[in-house]
Image (cartoon, helix red, strand yellow):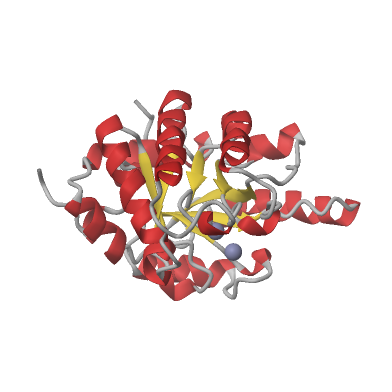
Length: 265
Ligand SMILES: [Zn+2]
Ligand SMILES: [Zn+2]
């Protein structure tokens, strides 16, 4: 099996700007770093908080949708995919037009937005199952699982955790949702999370899931560095054709038609 190299990675599909509030780089800085690191595409996936006031809604629909028109076509030598990261378990903004304007929607597991004491893994699975059709990818499904219902699930790769992850991998394939390999998970070494990632990725390898790569950068200089993800993908011999970031046709298909070079297959 040919090895995957940094050169094969054309996109970073999970990046935050200052619009996420707890991230620190502007859109321009992110685009400049993306180009420096050899990216041809950059998905901007600022957090969606959905606090609900009219001002929030106005800001959110603006910051999520203006970026493609501003940065494309190719002002920075990098094509911008306008997206957002939503929170599992959090009531999401259901305005149809906004959801349609977003071209890369992540459903991210963050325990902040979940009742950690009282939510079971089964309920967590149901959030994914019920909302799958609204999203393009499930982001960092391995994160923070030790904080969910922590009286029952530890940091170990228990049979319950394995079962949960395996069911999510199968669900994702059934619904054609991409699963994200998150460089931040591997870099930060949060309790148990890298082991959980390796576990589900090996299940996904057997199951033939499509995956995406995201640095989850909250600082621009982290954009496009997939060193740890690439090492893991090569260890598991993950097929390159199943990685969205390596496929120009699939990446171009995420852009509005007027910014595409290629007609997707
Ligand atoms: Zn964040
Ligand atoms: Zn993120």
